[in-house]
Length: 147
Image: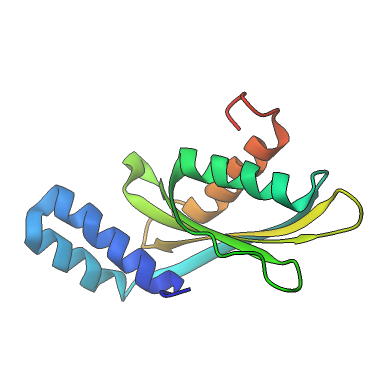
């Protein structure tokens, strides 16, 4: 990954700041993000899908929620990672970085670790936790029904 979570969140908060306060808002939001705590929520699970199908399903869900940043090719060990950024929090003003690590697990199954990270200030929005729950809920629903 070219950027870590904090860099991605600072950049995304700068974009939010620019949309609400122009260029000064962009710089201010990016600067202020350095002082906010990054809170992450992580969950592990197994999908009853082969790796390719699980990768495509997750990529579709993440694209519906935000922007898929990168999807490196499968490693020699069969592992994959997808990274995206989506909006969360009140009014969609709190960006959330989502990282999914996937790997084959037995015949026709895929193990994954889903991690969401967001900046939190004084008022806790639990954006990372809510995003993780939303993705898990979409994975549990049949394709075409919001997932």
